[in-house]
Image 1: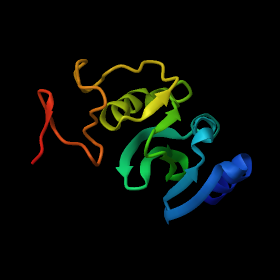
Image 2: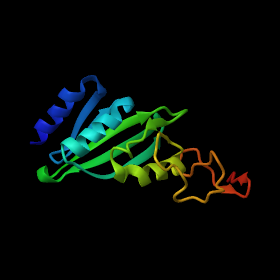
Image 3: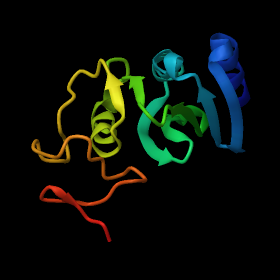
Length: 154
């Protein structure tokens, strides 16, 4: 069933699928065009009846990587949709209106990594205080702890 699912995603979304990597018999990573992510995520969630687990964001040397983890419980399978965002201006369309469970984790990634989630339904602070220094993202590779207006230089 898992191979049929991956082949179905590839057939439906064509050029939006950049790469497929079978990590194991239970986990598949599918690198997708960021512009098509909302459509592909909605397809996994609604049409394939996948359960949205979480997404994780990382600041890598080559840009920002987000993995959207979907569980296909009936097939004992995890589908990971992977996007790579511009390192200078990380921005992507929010999936929260289509996959409501993504709302809070997108807010966390915005606060901690500075990734812009366009058209998010409720983009306000979740973890950090409302007076947190703008442009100060604690999970970025180049982050230095902010202490009352000065960066720690040690």
